[in-house]
Image 1 (spheres, rainbow, N blue to C red):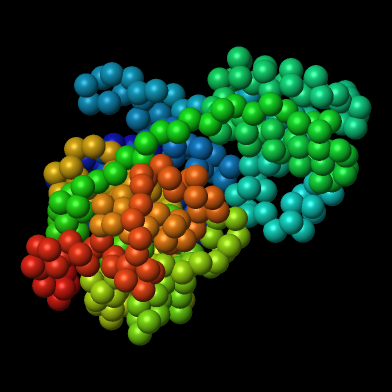
Image 2 (cartoon, rainbow, N blue to C red):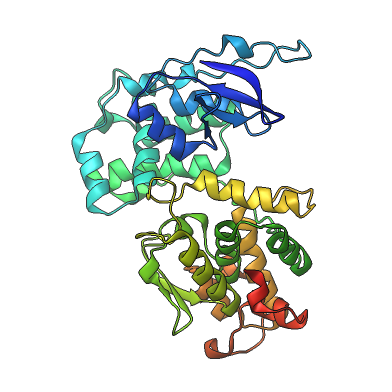
Length: 379
């Protein structure tokens, strides 16, 4: 049961639920909920609460009574949560066993398997009374065109849906690739959104929690993806060699990146205070830190620093690459540090000069040196 309340002079949404470990684990892992002993319930600050998102996160394990939220304090109705009725068929449709087995054999990530399976169920739902082996190329093209016109799918989702269909015909059935060579959308080449060096310093300076400060510094100073930070283990950080090992990154490839001296100091201080067990950054239950929590930490740091634009973890990665280029580091080394398979992906950050990997200095350390800051003051 959800309702509006005031807690510690702050507007919150209270969450009252009968004891259920599954629901409690979900509350801890996918939302920014906190436990209040005085209210004897969980709660989320009103600013962080999104009903549609909350509904989607819990609709599979709980009945949600949000009737008390239907009118805000100014008596304006809030939007009803989306039930996604167009995808209810996914609960009833079962993809061929060999489809999932082949995905697992090819060692596709869990998120990719989940997406491919969902999209292939949609494809099967579109042709309910057809033998999948009999569907022709033109019919597949017609299905994709239907999704573009009626569902307004994005270009990236169009590509994923095509790949999910092609995987069945090419990898599971072993048919010729050219038969199902569906025309792809031309990818947009948008310039990455980056932060200035001064904004990076402001965010770190405004973030008082040592764990959050170390988290932000690690993403930025090593150019990590959010998923790579989540999968970072304590043993993957080599303090002596000043190296971070990134294992099973995008494309299931391992790589190394640089460990900034400033970040090393922050990580050591954080580890001393929080004593992480296995993962470098853990939640309260000692499991991996959630992606949602990482995004909120970065967003909160930017807000405290007075940065009005929307800041994401990936912006820190973009900023890492951009600042290295401005430092004069060769694009080929930046490509290696970022884990890009093709230099074309890295070219978006601009042009290059020549440096050796051994001489590359993390932009965080350079910023600190340029501003004559003390590493130990970061603690």
